[in-house]
Length: 241
Image (tube, rainbow, N blue to C red; front, side):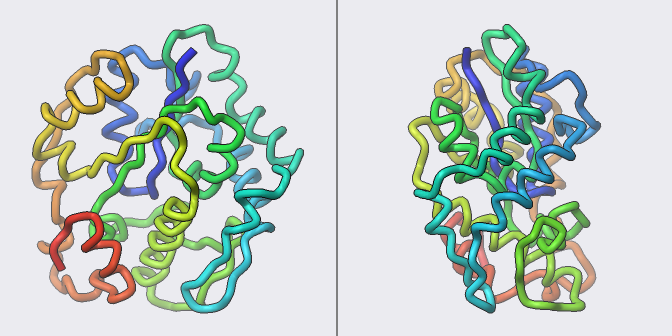
């Protein structure tokens, strides 16, 4: 049995890898929505709220994730995750997994529950990620505190940086690789070959659209997406300011 999951904020282009895995014979759940998310998601949403109780907000854009790495995993969390993943865990496919962006909100405990998983860290320029709305835009829906703002784009950017920092705070699992959405689109063959070596399976090729890259630059007021608190992560991941 080989489990695969995708870690990355909503609107980071994770549907591309979900559709690729599905087209390659990986069992991705009994029900998928058009984005390739495993549904219904409600047990995962509730699991996110359970784990969030152990995240400490220090004010501003500072959160403490230390307890998540050592404390016992809440039994309610385990039950909810096993409920959400029941069809995947019970399936006898040689390669199986799931994609749901909210999995990123519980990454530390997923990594501890399933250390054998092959994790695909999916990254996209955050300025593109925040163009559209997503369920995780308001982190308070999942029990996570953050600075109040009436700017919807700032709210999305805060959600992006929270999830990015949570990923950074989680010790690297045994099997993890990072993929930039832009590389998947602009250098698909090279990127898929690297993923094939990581996953140990041949992957199908799907149609990609180069115009999905750097969409924020074509917006009427590109400055509204370019928040200064995103700059460090933008540079770290090889994007230009």
